[in-house]
Length: 77
Image 1 (cartoon, rainbow, N blue to C red):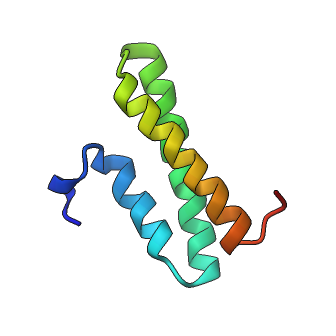
Image 2 (tube, one colour):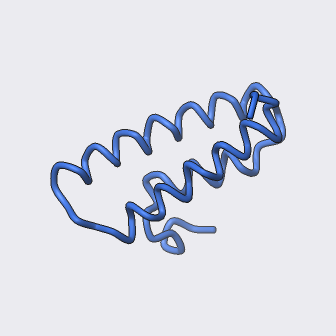
């Protein structure tokens, strides 16, 4: 997907990259990076905006990351 197809490409593009990664070490690094991006964006939204759509999308992204960590990176549930 191109960035134009993402509503929030700043963090959705890296999330897609993490989902599509097959190398375990690279996936772990990408997951950690996207967790940082999401945390920072949530902080920004809490200070400056009531963007409920992006907030809900960020919460969904965190759920996806939890699944990746549990299923692909074998983190404890």
